[in-house]
Length: 168
Ligand code: S3P
Image (cartoon, rainbow, N blue to C red; front, side, top):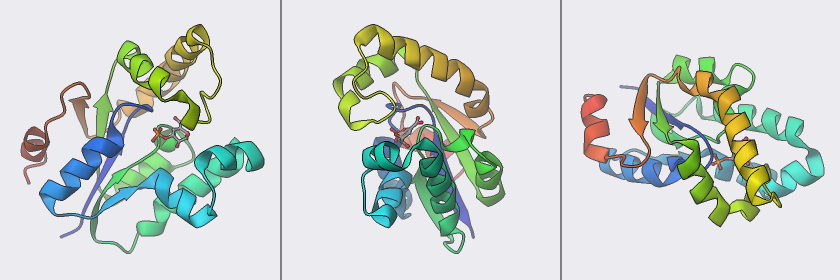
């Protein structure tokens, strides 16, 4: 049986951390989309943004997302922007199911302000600029994230509960 699970949500919502746990419990391979893009490009996401620009990154992101078509099953942590570009969300739903890891902008802000320099979209932003960026970007993306098949609270995501949700 084909079983592909895509975790979507804003930067800092915990997609990778939770994805690893979920994959381990379900005995499925775990794929971190940002890491796969970096492997393919032999370059960090930060440098792709810096030297090739966001448009090129978005194309690479979409291509990499679709490069696992032959795999039967996996859990994938997507990037915060992944479902928002091209036909990526449609593609995700043609392949499997999506789970939105929802977190409020204040919690996202707290998490990102500790780790902002590794993320190109927020690099070098001052505290007030960071909050403004999160709120504005979140406003634009929320309606896309909300189209996920399932939604879980990012403050206390529980592997067992999610597995019940998925009837696994
Ligand atoms: C991005 C999120 C990042 C990464 C890139 C762009 C975004 O992924 O893909 O920096 O536009 O929200 P994470 O959500 O894993 O940080």
